[in-house]
Image 1 (cartoon, rainbow, N blue to C red):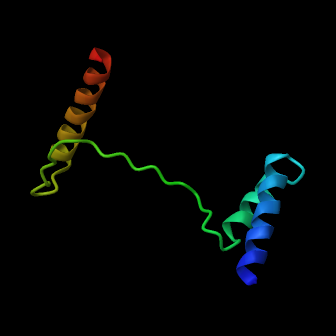
Image 2 (spheres, rainbow, N blue to C red; image 1 turned 60 degrees about the vertical axis):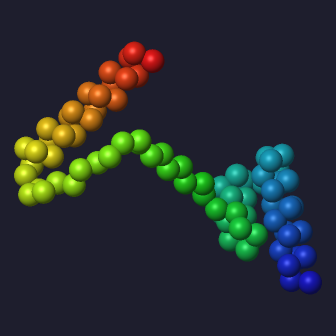
Length: 80
């Protein structure tokens, strides 16, 4: 019975938010806390390739490798 009530409440909040009858921020907050599994989506992107660990933590080495990676990705975008 509790699950049914939670689902009904979530459905009402969802419809109210979509029709703009309810405040969007309040609807989102209520849906995230409704127990129905709604949450913020997290996008994670992976870059293919092998990353070598930094051996000594030298700031110059870190900067060089960082800038080399940025230059590589910008060049690839310009070519594609």
